[in-house]
Amino acid sequence: MESRIVEVAQRIKTLREILDISVEEMAACLDVSNEEYLSYENGDNDFSFTFLHKCAQKFNVDIVELLTGENPRLSFFTVTRKDHGLNINRRMGFHYQHMAHNFKGKMAEPFIVEAPYSEEAQNQQIELSTHEGQEFDLVLEGSLKVRMENHILILNEGDAIMYDSGHGHGMIATNGQPCKFLAVVIKK
Image: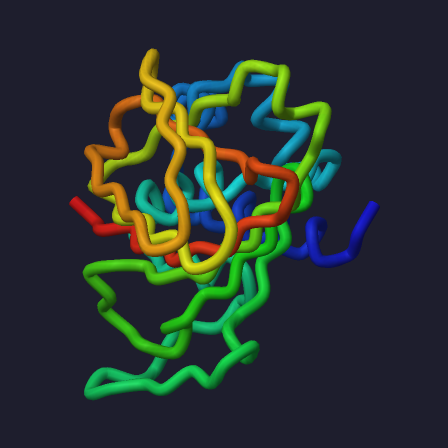
């Protein structure tokens, strides 16, 4: 079990208890069973971005606080240099860099996302997730196969998509290479 996962799980459990939120309420908020929620809270499973995002919204805290235990402090501006964002490694090898993790009171969460290419994933149905708000994704390198509920689109370098993230959405790298894209999650 990775120590970072256990640390995040402990922060989630502590916040849930402090805010007097039941396991059942959290499980319902996250669209998982009570048992599955408890396995996350115990640090038995790694967290998807959507899981962390929904927890942060439910607790009314910045996602950075869940990941690091620290609260962002900057309120005028912040600069994040290339390759120096807050690293978040989640689901199927996707690598996220939070590009404004030090800024407090964010109305949007900007990430550089690196999606690995998987030949196996090309022939499987893309897993969908949902979260409140909207999302804007801009392909920086490679190609991205995007599933918007029952719609499949291919986005290439320079292409962008914006959507209501309360609808099912998912994506994988395609065309034989990894994909790098800017994802901006806009809070509701």
